[in-house]
Length: 529
Image (cartoon, rainbow, N blue to C red):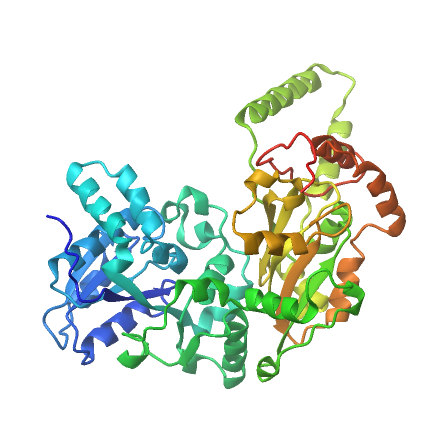
């Protein structure tokens, strides 16, 4: 049956996110028990095989009798079940039986990925991968209409935060697999941390419910509010116990806007404000970063670190590694791994056949390895961070330029004690012009970032937190840059036209503590843009 195109308006949707045990299900129960005046369909996503949440909901009497509960199991909405979610939302809208939808996402769900389900692009992707003719035709109808948002619109993104466990969660070094088991995560989420997920859920929310507020002191609650306000300055913050919230605060609020959601996070707003005050291409020595008056109320300030020199990779790594749990995503060719194994086996055979190497030598080697492998405890690392200028930094994000990496930019993202450093896309100075965006305003913005022979290569990292001291952060990060003498030698190598050759030569000039980055593309020569 074709999709109706005569719906008076799209069905509003409220998305509930939050960690397992935060109070999402209790909030859902409270919403349904209150008078709401809607015919509500509830979509519940639970990672367990027995959907406890759905049983709890259906076990309660609710004000109206027209709620419908749909259960998704053994998967996560933002990972494996987005296609199922899309199809179920289409079915609900098509049947015209309900006028409101509530989605309770699993505790490990990212709200932004669920929100993308409502885009025309996602509908088109699902139409291409659908397996039966009925689904294909249905999804094509949706694409033709302009996407799911013509039938259902995301109205409010609500994130429930557990006040009692918040401080531990924002500073933990646990991975999702440590906390909830690897079977509940997709392959792409294996190296995701608890802190990463918590920050994602907060930054994308329209409404943040701080639950179990009476379980902590007023002083600690104030700190929790400050951190949340730092991460998401524009969200409505509600403090409560037992997830008691008025329906008017979470239903039909019309708060959600995708463009606003992806640009309202604290770090991005800080960068925008800084750019407005500093401008593009200005003399960075004249830069003055000051908090806006409304942030002073919360004791929050920000600092945007900028520099037009590369970091010395070893100095940067050494400065960071005792203060943060550093995460690097590495992709290594399988063949190389096999060769390494073969080499190890050959070395073992050689050692077995070498009578000159006695037990004392072997014990000495093992002792050296133990010393090299000795790592700081989590407690020691947290203490080091607290004592450093990074101590009051809650969130940082941006990109960085390593002296040994001339083609790809580095991507920097920290939350609490977790710091993720990865390869990003190529610098625009290393990208052929035909691969640049076509939009004239975007191109103009890109060109404003170009300076000198190294073009758009630079450091630009937003750091936000409580009463952070920009001068101390500046000094610490500046100490990791190449010295004037080193930069002079660097420039002799980095002026050739062959970018791959430049990178190979630079790799031999500096000790590098970072993992190798895979090239997204390998430009053969430097093109003038």
